[in-house]
Length: 306
Length: 82
Image (cartoon, rainbow over all chains, first blue to last red; front, side):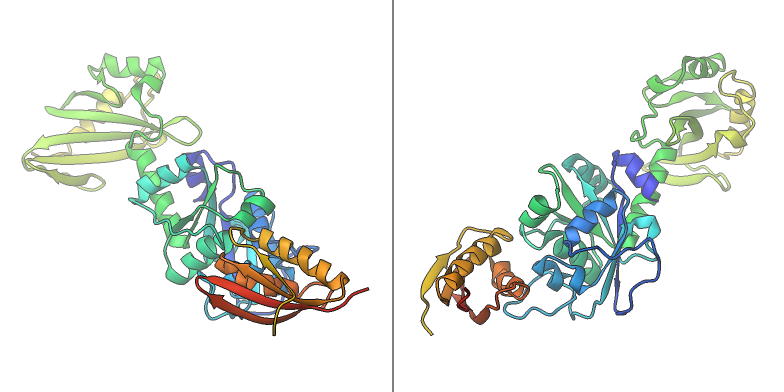
C-alpha cells in the first residue's frame, strides 16, 4: 500500500503510522525506542518519515501543545483544539506505517503538487488549519477523533524545530483513506488512467510494430483496430518498475452487449463499454515479436455478444 | 494582585512566546522576584506558557490565566533567585 502511494506521487518519505495506546506499560518491541531526551511529536514524525520508530509517553514529549493534543493531559487554562478528548492516552507509537501494528492514523509529508495529486484521486481532501497545534492536533488528533482526512499547513514549532520545509504540508488520515488511495492508484495503473506514463509514445518501437503487423494503429494512449467484427482499443500499462505488464482491451459497443466475467461493463448513453485487463505474463503473448497477439485479441473479442 | 512588569507578546507565536516569557521571568527572578503580566493574542500560548514553566528549575507560580478582550493575560510570580 505504502509503495503504491509513494511511487504514484514520487515521495521520498515513508508514510508514517501512529498508534494511540491507553496502556501505561511501555511497548516491548525493541524497534520502538523511547527518545533519550524529550522531543517534540512533530520531530518524531519527521524522523519516522526517514525510517526511525519511537514510543513516546508524557515525559518524552517536549511540546506543551502536543501534550494536550495527543491526549496525554487535559488542558488546564484554556480549551485547546483539536485534541484527543478525553485525555486517556498513555503511549504513542510512531514509525514507518508498515511497522506499526494497526495504526490509528497515517501521516504523509507532501509538497503541494503531491497533495493535489492525492486529492484528485479521492475527489477532495479537507484542509482545516490554524497555523498552530498542527502535526499533533490537525494531522493526528483531528483525523483520529473525527475519522476524516485533513491537510495541515503545519505550525511554527514544526517548521522551526522539526525541520519541516517551507514547501511541505502534512496529510493526516485514518487507515481507510490510505487503503482507498492505494486501491484507486492500483486500478489507475492497470486501466491506464493516463497517470502511469503509459502513453504509446513511451512504448518500445518493437511492440508498436507488433500491433502494426496485425492492423492496429497507434493513438495517443491506446492502439485501435478490429477483431471479430468489433472495434477494439488496447491499452498497455506499465508496472511500477516501468515494465509493460498489463494489457487492457476496451470494446465500445453501440447498443446492448454482453460478456461474462472478467469483463467489466458500463453504460455510456447509447453505448456499452466492455473492458478487461490481463497480466501480460499470464496470457502467452509475446509483445516484442507479436507472437500469439492476433489470436489472443480475436479470442477475447469473440466472447462479446452483441 | 498587581504586577511589577508587563510583557506584551501580541503577534508572537509558540515557541517564541515561551522563550521571550522565560527570558523576562529570569530577569525578574534575578532582580529580586516579582509578578509579571504576560499578554498574548495567540490562544495556544495561554495554555503552553504556564505548562512549559512547570519544567523550569526556577519554581514559578502561575497565579492566573484570564481572557481579556480577545487577548489572554497570564500572571506569573517569579521567586527571588541569587
